Length: 77
Image (cartoon, rainbow, N blue to C red; front, side, top):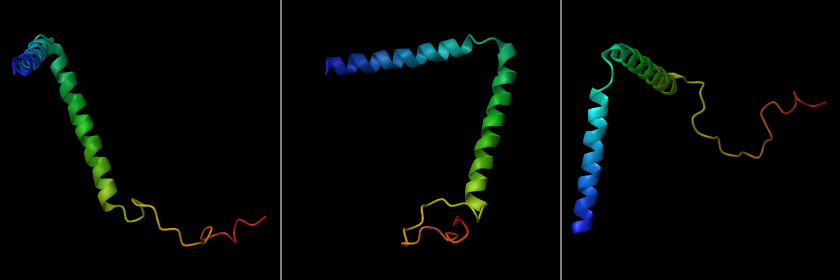
């Protein structure tokens, strides 16, 4: 029991140490972090919207039907 308690205390110390480091970030960098977060959010939204709404996008592999391809006659040499 004491070993588990000491690892939990160690993890808590690591988290508070990281938060303290975050507070030491220069204030001049906060606008850059804000712009990066907005850009990443917009990118995630755009990708999610594309995956949800594009009817021509194949999200799942089609089952093997035995045919080589639909246009196999077009590719004959």
